[in-house]
Amino acid sequence: MNTTLWLRRLRPLLGAFILIAGWAILHAIGAVDPVLLPSPSEAARAFWHGMNEGTLGADFYKTIVRTLSSFAIALVVAVPLGIVLGASQRLYESIEFAIDFFRSTPASALFPLFLVIFGAGEQTKIAVAAFGAALVILFNVAYGVMGARKQRQLAARVMRAPRWRVLTDVTLLESMPQVFVGMRSGVSLALVIVIVAEMFIGSTDGLGQRVMNAQMVFDMPEMYAAIFAAGALGYVMNLVFIVAERRFVHWGGK
Amino acid sequence: MRVFAHSQPPAAPAAAQAAATPGVAPHRWYPPGTHITVRGLVKRFDGVTVYDHFDLDIPKGKITSVFGPNGCGKSTLINMISGILPYDSGQILFEGKEARETRIGYVFQNYREAVFPWMKAIDNIRYPLQFLDLTKAERQERLDRIVSAFDVPFDLNRYPYQMSGGQQQLVSIMRALVVEPEVLFLDEPFSALDYEMVMFLRGILQKVLKEREVTTLLVSHDLDEAVLLADEVLLLTKRPTQVAERLVFDAPRPRSADTTVTPAFVQTKTRALEIFQREVRA
View 1 (cartoon, chains in turn purple, yellow):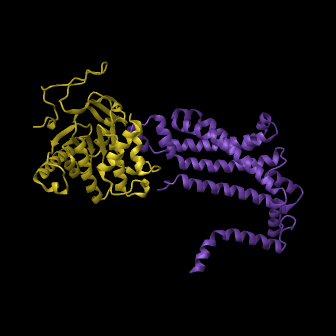
View 2 (tube, rainbow over the protein chains, first blue to last red):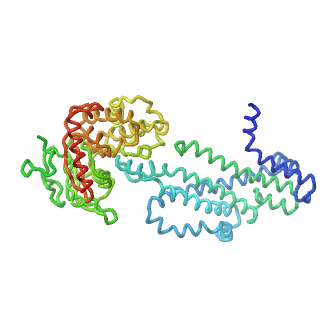
View 3 (cartoon, rainbow over the protein chains, first blue to last red):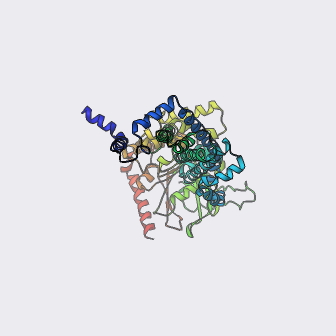
């Protein structure tokens, strides 16, 4: 009885276990060149060492700061704009194409443009990531506001709430689940763009740059450690938003 | 006996002119005791004419039930009167005022999409008070008054999704009544609830409405309910909709399930049914 309970709790970890076990077996039988595929324990040691004594922790931190700053900028710009856009059908229709076009343009294709505008510094990375994230958030907020069911808005209108109060008290809250979808996609995209920017536009720190450097000197355990750090970061950010949504949108799905 | 028992108003008595709003087409006269006047109302949906020069007087302080064939636009009518649905032409006035100048309470059929799930029940009920010109103390007083009038047998500090459907609809009704509306609109408010809850809500609603003499328009697809709650039953025709008949039902209140077996009730309902069937076949 107790054993089955434990097995059920551990079930979600099964996939990770199989992956690591498969990795260890491949390494042990020498199926892949050990230079390309170090053992899981070597990679884990590189991660541990990097976090505690090396510079992995600092790079990790740098990437978090960049991702969160760009996300914060995106949020501040995109949420109010998305609400305005979603609330006005005519406005939305007139700029839908422009937004959709830029949203479909890979943000990495805009690196050179942003480099010209912001120079090769910190700003460029954050600006591109913020740009990409903002468009995703903008779209989702606007869709959320447009798709919000009308009856509660009518109820508020009939209670004599002014238009802007209907928007803030009802429509915005009604569209909150969609806003959270936008925030989750936005922060993921910001991370992707920040990592790519760290790889290619003159970085001296950050996880992206670390992955790139490790690869160039063939320090594979170090590279896997940095990849793992980036993956963990993405996963945790997503988790944080899911938990926040459950807390904040407590009425969702009920 | 009752002025409102006729679909065509009698041609003489003390007529009020809506000359109060200059520039507007002169409002045809209406009998005293009238609260809502609908004149020359026209409404089309995609070329289908639902209302064509429709006239109606709704008495003040009474409960009027609206009943008619499917698709005749019962909900459409109260939505236009309450100001949440625009109409193509015509005029609707509340003692000479427009809907937006009138304190209105509206209870939707679909309570799940009418209450605000992000607010506790008590905050839902409190919500409309902020839009009235009241002091903080007055607001609290109104809130206390409605809560004590309904003597709610459950905790209002819960969220709507933690409540049963009937409790949510009760919250929705209290929210509509807390502003002490001049007119209350009820759009099939009990149709999605179980019978026990319906009986409870009908009882408590009648009590409050009669105490406060709120002009009430009730849309119902249940003829028993339409007659049971009404001072007057408004029977509508098929599209383009006209008033088929107005039936007064003046059985004493409070009315309960027992009322439905009294001769007066059966007689009124039978008459309503005859008219309804005639209109459906027409």
